[in-house]
Length: 247
Image 1 (cartoon, rainbow, N blue to C red):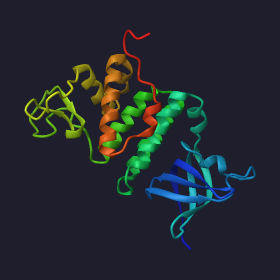
Image 2 (cartoon, rainbow, N blue to C red; image 1 turned 180 degrees about the vertical axis):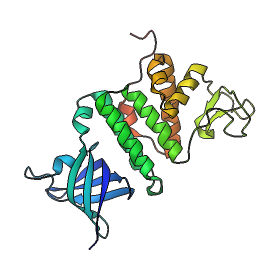
Image 3 (cartoon, rainbow, N blue to C red; image 1 turned 120 degrees about the vertical axis):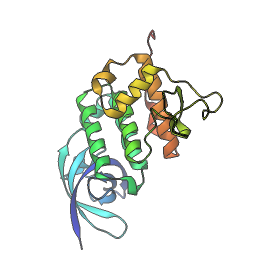
Image 4 (cartoon, rainbow, N blue to C red; image 1 turned 60 degrees about the vertical axis):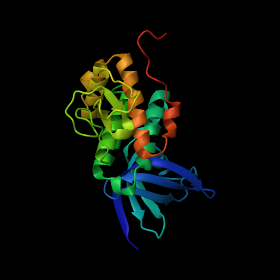
């Protein structure tokens, strides 16, 4: 029977029988993969620790009828321990892998894989605020899936900006004629931060005010959850970024 090898990020696992696990992975070349890892819950398992959420592994799989079978796993990125040691990193990473798991198989491209690996690596190293890493990941993963928010022209009629109303259900910024009554207005500092998060301009992101960071995070979360058509459960456990003047 055919076997194949690929790099993969472990998204989630759940128990199967007394000693096995079903592992859901986002691979570099084969998209999302669900496979059985036999015996990994035994203390004698040679690669059980390499198949935990947030880990990146080089895996060899045997192609089964409904579920593949993990034959080998070699660690490529041991991010789990550093992420799990910090609550804010852990909750942000959980939201990232949950989002990756929610995307359809057709959207699981090599670019999606590389974006997730980069985000988990940045979280494990504490390179930036965990919520900012998550917000940047959500904006960019939505763009890779064809749902990039409009941050300049009107998302509905393409009228040139600048515009101040942001409506996630309509695709981002909308002009006054297209904006529904009561649409929230977005400050220029928040809009600039969203553009920096989308572009990965970390100097600007790290220098943003707490108020702009909090406002941008709320918009990003609402936008991503609308387009995924289901809530991202992990977001409920993420602390809101502090606002200026908060004690």
